[in-house]
Picture 1 (cartoon, helix red, strand yellow):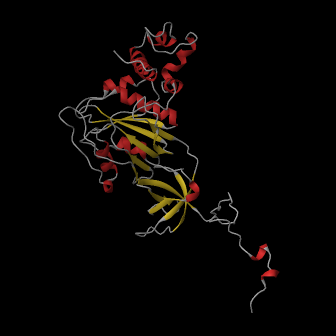
Picture 2 (cartoon, rainbow, N blue to C red; picture 1 turned 90 degrees about the vertical axis):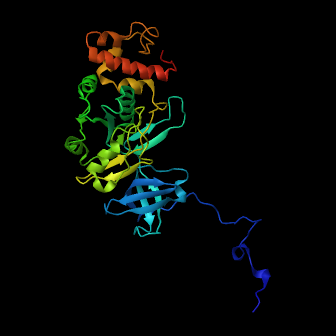
Picture 3 (cartoon, rainbow, N blue to C red; picture 1 turned 60 degrees about the vertical axis):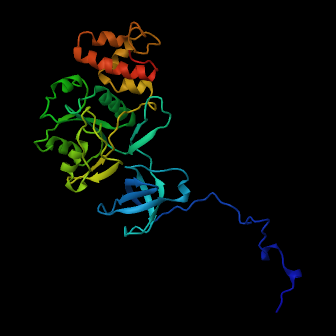
Amino acid sequence: MRQDWQHLDESDVRVRPGRRSSRPRSKNRPEHADARSAMVVGVDRGRWTCVLDSDPESRITAMRARELGRKSAVIGDRVDVIGDLSGKPGTLARMVRVARRDSVLRRTADDTDPYERVVVANAEQLVIVCALAAPQPRAGFIDRALVAAYAGGLRPVLCLTKADLKGPEDVVSTYAHLDLPIVVTRSDRAPDALREQLAGRVSALVGHSGVGKSTLINILIPQARRVTGEVSAIGKGRHTSTSAVALPLPDGGWAVDTPGIRSFGLAHVTSDDVLDAFPDLSDGAEDCPSGCRHLGAPHDSGCGLERLSEADPARARRLESLRRLLRSHAGIEEE
């Protein structure tokens, strides 16, 4: 029976002005109470590999849920995931939340680059891998990595490799005044001291190409099969690791292997962050005149850091490292 249209009102008709729906938009988002916690261990072209907290052996692939907007995740992030969590080939979960980070390792391409790159989140410590020979150690890189660690809330650890080629005494003495764990490895011995430092922790490893970082990873985690490479004739390593990845350690914890880098930019770090990264020197700043930038002559005079280091050659070397970074931040080129 045909219904008389005269008896209909607006509740019986869906009004569609133009092409837009009349249904009111809502900012409410689903709570996803059934979401499960996981850690991001790999990132590749808009897909995140995650390990469920409840199943450390699991590996699931997730995409970013719409409600996250532009918010993304990096290696080490704690996330909540829903959907197909079986991990079977071809399945895809959704990443619906990214937890607040406890620590962040950041770097820029150089000191003038405004684009800040988050390398890893929630790492407990930063292992700075430096070869004692082939290639030669670079104090500038170590200092910059230390600054990034302190600024990001990570505990720094210095790992000196290839001690069978050259002794570590000079480098160790340079950092003797820092509360900095230092481990030394050789190609003819197992890296037991490093293994002990990594056990039960989430650690990010950084270093120039060719320093032996991937070799160490393969010894500590045989199933990792990270590609290694030789040092070129000009003393620079060839890039082998091309992307960061978190790998489970046999004794518990995670090792985040990062790609070998040429430089460690600190455009995101303030001058105060730089000074705070040198606790053996920062107390001397209390004696500095107003407006002192701690750059040293001819840029500053009467700097309290100068007096602090006059009677200590090791501190004098540390002061010069600090001033190199501060001059870089100030845009002053080294002569």
